[in-house]
Image (cartoon, rainbow, N blue to C red; front, top):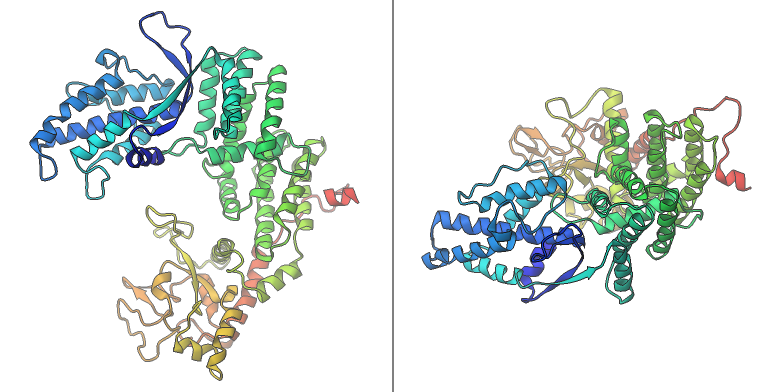
Length: 619
């Protein structure tokens, strides 16, 4: 919606916004009126209609408020003509119960309620605010409201936009019936027009559902709308990128017989054949796709899994950039009943995947392509076996992941000898958070409580920036004289080399909501010691705000080991931060990470039979 709004706003009059594929309505009995069923372009038409309605409402608001410094009496008076034109465009014979655009089911009801604002009393019927369609209109309405930051602050600007809106170019293509729609999709693609995989598969579904399965066009279109709505956010049209990502992973999970992932180019032909086979076998394949898409939405955290434990782990896996595992998890979650996988089984699989990806993202072993190939082979083995069920299946997954992963010794070496932050900052943040939570559970000490719940995963208001970010205790650079003397007292000129060696080790890292405030400040400032001031801003250790320590003394469990507790130090009394401290704390972190991210134990150990990995089976 934002893109379409900005295009109309900034492009020249007559801007081309795409195609509209329609077929004549079979039930139309009135020869004087042309009624069309929209095959492709419903969302675009809906958005344009809501633009018109929002313009009408903004015009009415200015009429009710009268003229001001931005709008003259003449400007306001001329709005009546614009509003009348909008009524004619939205309503047949200006009748509220006869809109030109008729939508599907619930959306049509809400659209009718919104249109009641065009009534003489100007009051709409109240539409349910929690519905996606209502939220979409509220968002569009906000685009046209006046205000300090408004892109349309005056009547003249509104009229300029309206003039461009009613003069956009939309190519209408009429086909004889739904079956012809697929031919049109294919023809457009062959001319080089930028149709997506989603566009082309929609045409295939339309053709075969009607021709082979003899399904009504209303039913096919409603199902397709249900499918695309799964990947549609509140304030936008269908997310083609995410929908395409699902289609590729869906093929890999349920159809692929190769250890190479399908591609957009390959999958078009593959899906065309599958759709035909499914409908000829009396399988409602579009409904099957919808069911799989809802599971995939759980993987992406667009929807929630009903189990809290499973959902928390899916959220963790999502943060670890684990796309290679999507086919496996899509298959297991979809087939969990058939595979005898309860929530505990799924939880163990997810714990194993989380441990695997933490290790992989820190060591960068194995390559992403090798992971994907191994995952696809595992899915194929599960699909082809009637024995891999329940705990035995879970053990097989764990064994595969352990075999694919680095050893504990290699993992420990990577933690202590290499920088972690510069390899993968997102995984580093995830590790810091999970170690903190582990310590909270095992030591019964926590910065958080019922009155102040854990917000380590939260984001800043109206932002994609995490509330808690990574803080380098020894700053990344450039170093101040204080820090040069701290880490290289005998040879300050060597400070930069020491910084490069130690700055990204996990022992030098912590979490804070005050990253930009701490910056290059000294570890402790003995010239300006903390004596209860509020705020206090002289050092990282004692930084305080609103009566609370928010620097290194904030109270995080991982901060307690900034001090060498075995030597009697405490965070309150520690005054220096040296390379030796960083190495000591890195060793401590290594032990915590190996504990938190160990692989789950095999449940079948000691029972009759063995669990063989795919690599062992191929040897």
